Length: 224
Image (cartoon, rainbow, N blue to C red; front, side, top):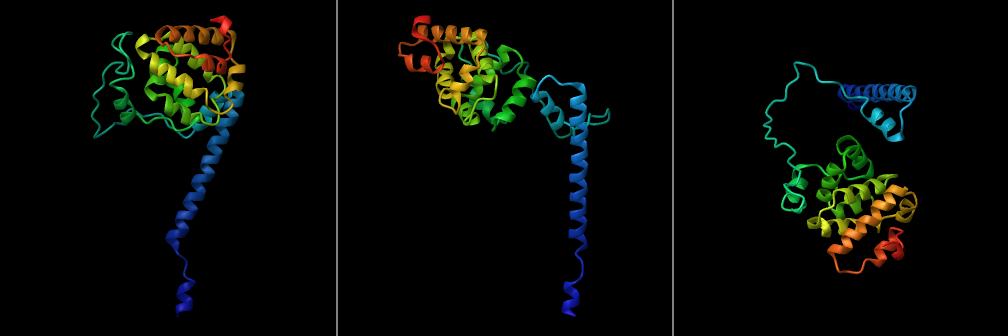
């Protein structure tokens, strides 16, 4: 009798396994269709291609879809500083980090950066709010291609003397990540000019010696 009982199928477990297999198969074909669609559309970059595939399973909201049990208290552009002369890193930085899920990987950062931070003012605020240490963890292995130049342009364009310590910390931490020298080599002329100008501004705010950091960013002393 006990031997017979051991041979009885666990239909609940079997049903779950079949459901998981069907879900995996469905996901495969949805992503495969997205890949074909992206190639057909001739997307401009790998990031666009990846975003299309990652979003393949998402469905648009219907008219009857509603958010329930959620109270919104939104302030227009709440992350923007009140004035260029007021540091943007405090006191709201802690609130920002508590209320917004910070990216944990370079891929997560790139998705957020490309989708929601397309102007230098938004990029500047985003970088300062994430902070130097968090950025160095995200890009511990390497800085995603092209991002270092974006960072330098945003930091230079929107630079405020009140943020000089935070900006300097970001530059120092990024210079210590993997393959940093390779990222510097791929900077465009415009990005290099932004870098040089940014260091001039930092030197006007700080009396500390920045020679080693300038060398890391490929800036010759004679150019400053």
